[in-house]
Length: 92
Image (cartoon, rainbow, N blue to C red; front, top):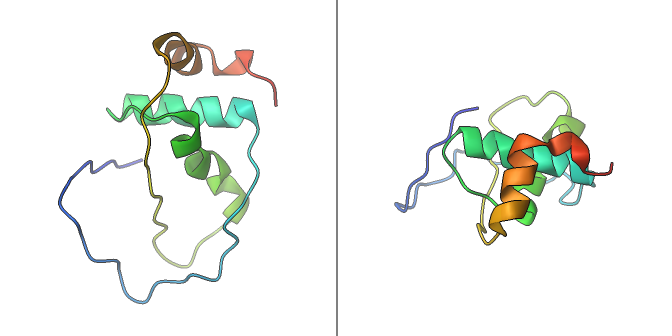
């Protein structure tokens, strides 16, 4: 995973596909794993922000780049630490 945290707006690649499902359910364990993946990339993300990454495997192969919007880092310190260190402790 490559992370590019930036406050500078960037144009979306063209052409963008907006015809993919917006809601893909992911379990708490997958979301905790995504919180940990973001943490390893230097990004602090709450569960809602990590849910897009957690659901990414459900998309299957993509013919082009996939853009995940990561917003929200308001997560309790103990919960964040648990997600990073023990994602398996969360239910599916």
